[in-house]
Length: 188
Ligand code: GRF
Image 1 (cartoon, rainbow, N blue to C red):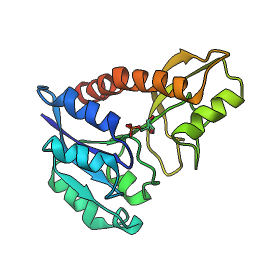
Image 2: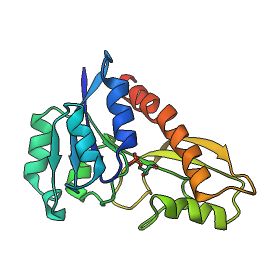
Image 3: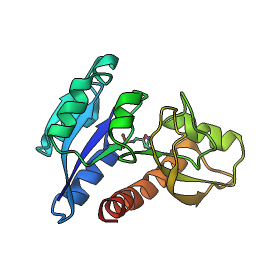
Image 4: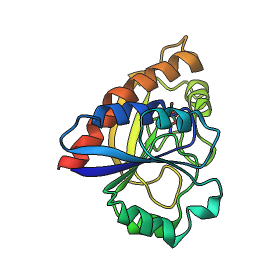
C-alpha cells in the first residue's frame, strides 16, 4: 500500500476527487493534505474527509529539512500537486526524485510558467485562438510547469468558448484522468 500526500492551495476539487478515488483502493491511499493557505476551501473539505491536514503558511516552511524528514517518516511515496501555487524548493524535489507530480490545465509547453494558473490559463488559450486545450500531468522540477510530461489529454476549444465553459471541460478531464494516471504511476 503506497502513501500519497496532496499539496493544494485552492478549491481542492481535484484533491477531493483523488481522495475519493483511493479511499477503498488496494494500491494506495491519501494520508496527508498540505496547504499553504489556512483559509483555502481545500482545508475544510479535506478535514471533512478525515485525512490529516497540515498548514504551512510560511513559504520557508517548505524549505526546511524537517519537512523532508517528516514526509519520509510518514512513508510518503508520491506527492501530488493539485492546484498548488508555490514553487517547491530544490532540496524537497531532490529528496523525492520522480515522486512529485503536478497537473496543469493546458497543453504544456503552451500556457505554463509563473502566474499561469486557474482562469488565467483559459483566458490565454482563448485569446491565442488555440483550437484545442487540455491537461498536462508532469513531474515537478525547480521551474514552474517545466518538468517532464507524463500524460496529456485534449479537448476542443470552440469558437464560442468562454473561460467558464473551458474551465468545465478541463475539470472534467482532470477528474477523469488524474487519479488514473496516479494509480498507474503507483503500480508500474
Ligand atoms: C486545476 O484546474 C489544476 O489543473 C490547476 O488548478 C486547478 C485546481 O482546481 N493546477 P481545484 O483546486 O482542484 O478545484
